Image (cartoon, rainbow, N blue to C red):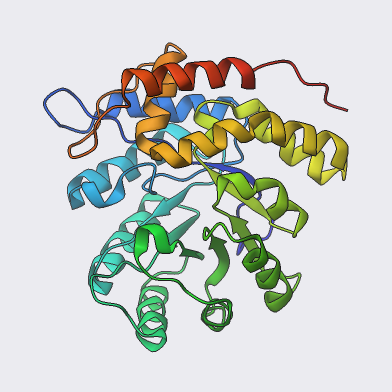
Length: 300
C-alpha cells in the first residue's frame, strides 16, 4: 500500500464512552476498539464525529489517541482526527498523533466565523508544514459549518502531504464530480453512510463509517464485492444495511451506535451532555432494524 495513502476499504469510527461521573471510560473504549479490529475493519479512526471530538478536552483527546494506538498495536493503520477551531490547536493535536504513531491525521475546518478559501488553504498548509504524516482533508458542512468546493479540495492537493479527501455532503453528484476533477490517482473516501454503494461505484478508495460497530461483516463484504466487481451482490448487501445506515445518521451517530451496542449486549458507557440516549421508542425501532439487517445474505 502506498505510504502516502495508508487506508483502503472500511475505516471504522469508534464511539468515545464515558463513565457515570463524566470521565472518559478508557477500558470500555479499548474493548470497543479491539472489537472493531478483530471484526475485519481495515483501519480505525478515533476522534471523529462519532467519537464526539469537540466535546473532549485536549488531555482526553491525547488519552484516546494513545489508547487507540496501543490497542491496535500496528494491526491496521490508525487515522486520528485532530480538528480544532484554531490552527494552533490542530497543529498541537497533529504533532501529538504523529508522535504517538498515527499513520495519518484527518482535518475538518471548524469555524465560528465563515472562512474564506484562502484562510482554509493557509490553515491546512500550516498544519501540513508541522508534520510529516499524510493528511486527509475532510469536508462535512453539517458538522464543521463550512462546505469546501471540489475546486478548493483540488487546490488543497497542492500541499504535498495532503493525499486523501473525505467527502460527506451526502450529494452523489458531488462525489462523481470530485472523482472527475481529482482524477484516478487521488484517494477519496466516502463519509456519507447512505451513499456507500454510489461512492464505491464512483471510485471511492474507502468508506469512513461508524457502522462496523454494529454490522462489521456486512460493511466488509460490501467492500469486497465492489473490489471483485460483483455488483449484484454489492447491491444486495448495501440494501440489506441501508435502513440501518439511514437510522444511525438521522438519530446522531454517538447516540445510535451506543444504543445499538447495548442492544447487542456490549458495554458502551455513557454519553456526555448535552447528548442524551435514544428514547425507548427509538431503541425499540433500532432493535427491530438490527433484527432485519442481520438476516442471512448470499455472498458470491
